[in-house]
Length: 136
View (cartoon, helix red, strand yellow):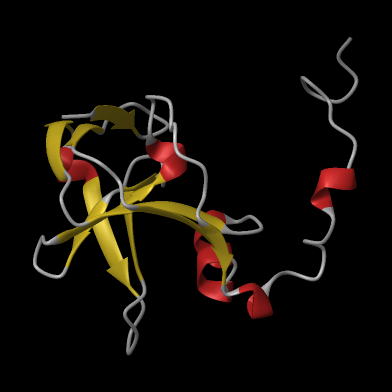
């Protein structure tokens, strides 16, 4: 059974995911953009994988946007996005960036592209810099 390790930015929260992911979506809805502070949310989904909290579970909080299904789990110390169970624990949503183990699957699709940010077009044409700007 595949195992994936993950943590928050400050390292207070650590977890292990046991099992496979069925889907990987890049969501461009305005809520996921607000959650991530970026062009999209990048989440892995599984109906079979299970999470085990290695440390810091007391630092995990979940925010649900009122009158919606939109939720975000995060570390109270550093604010990093963390996995969350949905549908009474039957479904796991894992922010791809929270994993320390390699993510070997490619995203299945960009979703909610009608809500895409105005500046999120042709990003493959933007120059790449291997480190920080000005480093050489």
